[in-house]
Image (tube, rainbow, N blue to C red; front, top):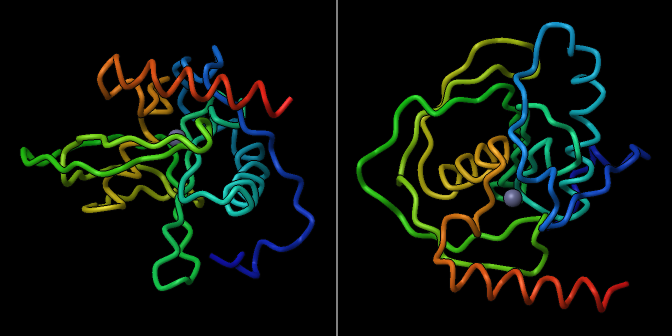
Length: 180
Ligand SMILES: [Zn+2]
C-alpha cells in the first residue's frame, strides 16, 4: 500500500501505545465544543500516524489521547478514502455475526479471528461537526467496531478466548522485549 500523497508532508507522528498499557484500557471521554481546535490539529497527525504504520484504523486512545475520536481508511482500490468519526455510536447491529481476522497497531504482529455483528449502523460527527450516519458491512463494519471498542478501553484480544489472549500477550511481551 503506497502512502497517499496528501499525507506525505512532515506532519509529526504520534507514538502508538503498545498493549498492555493501562491507558489502552481507559474509557475515552466525548469530544466537546471546546475541543474543536485540538481535534483539528489531531486529525491530520492521526492519519499520518496510521498511514505510516501502516494501518487501516486508529483510535485516539492508541496515541494517548482520551477522546472519542477515530480515523479509518481502507484504501479501496488503493485510493485514499479517509473517514473521521467523532463521538461515534453504534445505533443498530445485525443479528448475523461475521468472523474475520483482526490485527491492531497496539498489538503489532498479532492476529486472531474475532466474531462481531456482520453489519452495524453508526452515528457520529464528521470532521466538520456535521451529524452523520453510516451503514457498514464486511471489513468496514469490523474496523468501525474494533476502533469504537478502543474508545471503551476494549482490545480485540478481549473478544477472544482467555487461552488465545494469554498466548498473544505472552508472544507480544517477548517480541517487545527483544526490540528494546
Ligand atoms: Zn486496534
